Length: 255
Picture 1 (cartoon, rainbow, N blue to C red):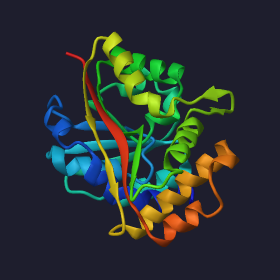
Picture 2: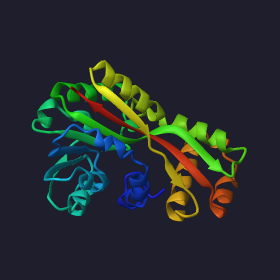
Picture 3: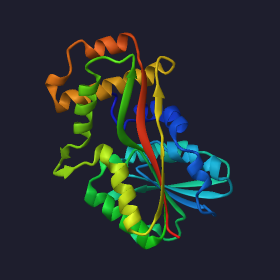
Picture 4: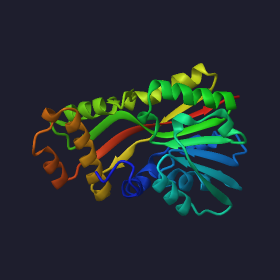
């Protein structure tokens, strides 16, 4: 894979992300929404997708710990009635004071990279500030390929285990993140609505499908080198399958 957080990969996946997100959750957002803080903003794809759906004047605070991605994002969000600022910061350092005047906190493909303690802390900050959260595209651990191969289930299981790995002393939640976050928000007094947000990949999206396959198989092999036969990836790439890759979108509101 070109790198999970490289501009190339994030740009490649942006159309599939936009197609997958649960647009009906936008209709449920408490209005007005004028100031939005986007955590782990990447290239700014969330702003490009959501801002036109919100309408009206908006100010986006694009937050990321990667200065190169942050520069890219602030340079590539150019929308009518939308102003943008960058914030070089880590989601784990967010405070209620950071959210003063904020109407909405968003993120995309982020929750599965956090630990239980980090999600607890994030939820506590949002609850203290009484700020709505729209968290999209959290990995759900649901992958199906058509046509299927006998190895698919083992590769998927190894990938999920990799998503739950210990990284620098941190036990990542991976596909357990959506359910854990929903429970944490509910315990904090929020009303939670979730929706499936499924990637639909296949031959009509050859670059993205091939790059996703490479990353999926690579992570599985890193977790368990014995699980993938030498010809598995080559065979899959030579005749791209249709793939359904499950994610979850979550909306949490504090009445």
